[in-house]
Image (tube, rainbow, N blue to C red; front, top):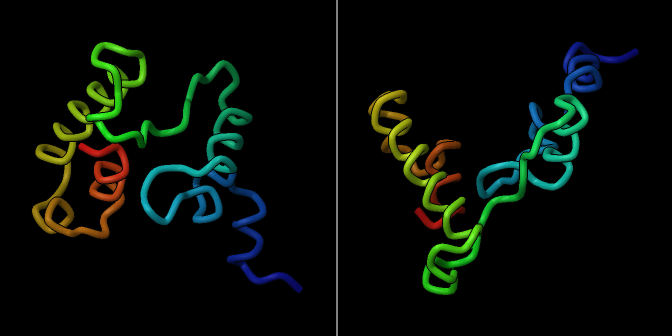
Amino acid sequence: MKTFKQYLEEKSPAWQRSAGKDPEGGLNRKGIASYRRENPGSKLSMAVTTKPSKLKPGSKAANRRKSFCARMGGMKKRLTSAKTANDPDSRINKALRKWNC
């Protein structure tokens, strides 16, 4: 007999569970694949983890990184509590670190 937690995990897509999340922040390949299945036409891509000094200025990757950092930095300021904003293990801070923001 399955537990309630096992039943829920079977029904929810990987991008909503820890199986699809990278422990260092963001989604892993399994999470991105499940998100694309759930949302046809999605253009979700892997994080730009290259150091900013190694990216060519104005390149597609550099522009994605710059846009992500600006957007998530604003969310961190306005849409999170002070506790979450200062917690190094919060999902938003992990994602910002992963993207080298």
